[in-house]
Length: 447
Ligand code: PA5
Image (cartoon, rainbow, N blue to C red; front, side, top):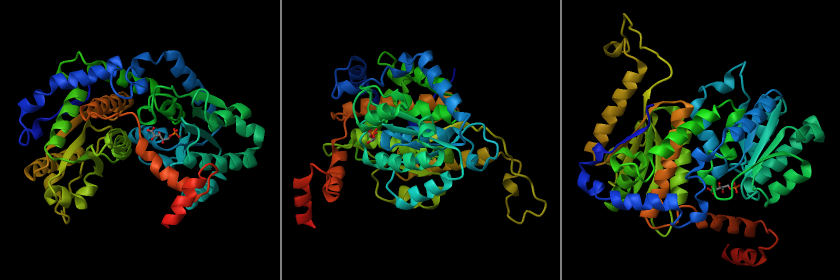
């Protein structure tokens, strides 16, 4: 079976291959930290062997629930934020038809999102549109206490109960949360909602292959078995015993780390398929929240090409030389479309008539890669055979594994996020949450 590959040859003008190769023992040591649970944050390593340990019965339970719910609804609102949101959206958008929302006879409920912002207009407009559709809710929060999803859930639970009645609403609400603690667990118990558990030893941004991602994705019609299968393949080929040059996670982690040490402080994840936009959003959270601590870490940014070649392209080509670029390159498209010839040729495009649109896209990709490398931006290419569940499962796991290794190379804990608390503390102080009286006084004095 084909798999995702990582090509680092377009970094060799910036760093010699022997320097990257020289890191292989160190990278292996860090990879072993993940396998043997001997590194920092080792109580959050449940994701490392997750793909190979998920059993078919668990997947079938999720699929059966999904089938059962899907029969009764047209739309499912997935409530969550951060790691309880981005993985679902990344996979769903990468694998769904671009104009699914306009399709009349969809086979599966359309996924909409809430709880990932506190926009009053967003929630009002969502509630308005939900008046006219049959919908269900999947509410996801590991802690069960995150403010943004809690607000959205209170609003939509109310809305659904008013619309279909309290008892019927219970059958349309699924929760995904901790096995025992948190307000969401308490509510689920009190109301009798169907609940799936997020394992204790898996943090939010590494949780897409737990019920956090699998439950909503199954409802949305994604083949979760193939997704997990892809991740299983990647688990095998990113293990510490796999030779460095054949291990995509090791190659990726070692190369970006080397470039970082040479002053490349920003990594841009670029795609040439719009559908990968949210894969980049998920990746930004994964790397930003895992690595950005103790004054260290590559800043993860992203661009959608070719659109952003007409905006950020200028900076990438000629701005400050602190950038490296990682390109997600999809080998085969799922559709075929050829540019027709035009006898009048008023647009001057006949020189590419008869070519597949993807061939033109690939030339844009190659031309950009060469230009950026010439302009001082080293390039890593991640090649994805095509967009399907199997390869997206591989991609997700490859990035997770490389992120764990990368964090350990920086000698930080890649599995905590202490910095996220700062805004929450201020927000709670400003909102006068009970227990934050001292903080309220202090913050008021600053204003
Ligand atoms: O990666 C993380 O741990 C975070 O991004 C969380 O996923 C996010 O804060 C949401 O947390 P919770 O699932 O507890 O609501």
